[in-house]
Length: 343
Image 1 (cartoon, helix red, strand yellow):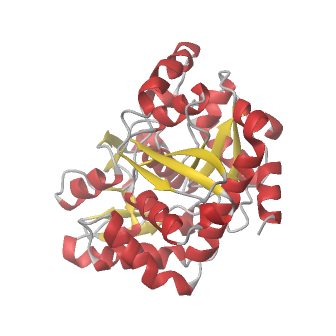
Image 2: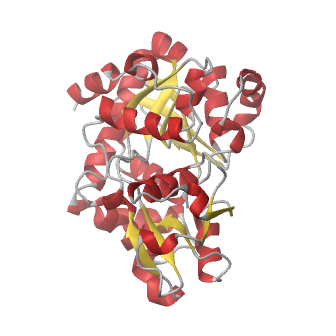
Image 3: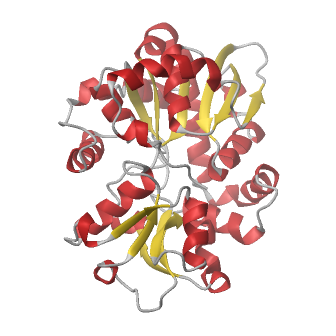
């Protein structure tokens, strides 16, 4: 399930950014796992991603299809527990790139001086629905006065609920947010009746009756402008290892195209079973079905100015950023363009 963004990254100070360097030395040691993809010779890349189930499955698929060796790369992939370790390891240079991460926290970090760039899209559509246990909660308007389970302020789960409410003219002070934690934790709290409503991944979408909940909103439809995941790296890595980064993006573009096709179902279900042994076939099938949604993944790696402005506007509205930054300050899409040319 998805991981929340730490509160320190929601409002990063210069002191916090300096701490990233110290954190980076630990990033490789505190990873939840690593995944080797050995290319025959080739250039080396070190990838860092978080450890959500969906990420682990995509990494397993990447290996099974040999997409990294196909672009002459040998890769080591680290999985860490949260966004602070991603940013730390990139700034320190111990890793080269992250490809499957939310980037809402990257934008305020750049504003505070972090030398980072967003370089492509990954998962474009939110893989989340808003779930409730009370049958009387059927729309956004029914959430007024209710208790909403999310992650910390500025984290993905909190941010998407603020955006959903704002779409219907509901202010944050009209509901009660409770910091529950991850998407899985939020869903457990909803099904147990500890909170009235909250966002969680679509892996449980086809098991609503089993858990006694129902979907109030499908966020990939309600908030199509919200970019779920992207790839980002450091300015230093772009300068030093541009070709390696381009090749890595090309490998992931192949992955996004494959998972978006109906031909991927059997391989995806097998990969899910291996990557998440505790899962069942229904959960895996729900996630694969979501991947078939048009535009779910950035098959051409595209991430335009409008999508990044939407994310910045949302940050500014929540006080996470003080202003909208110029596109060239936060993004470099030339690497994605070059990667697509390799396909």
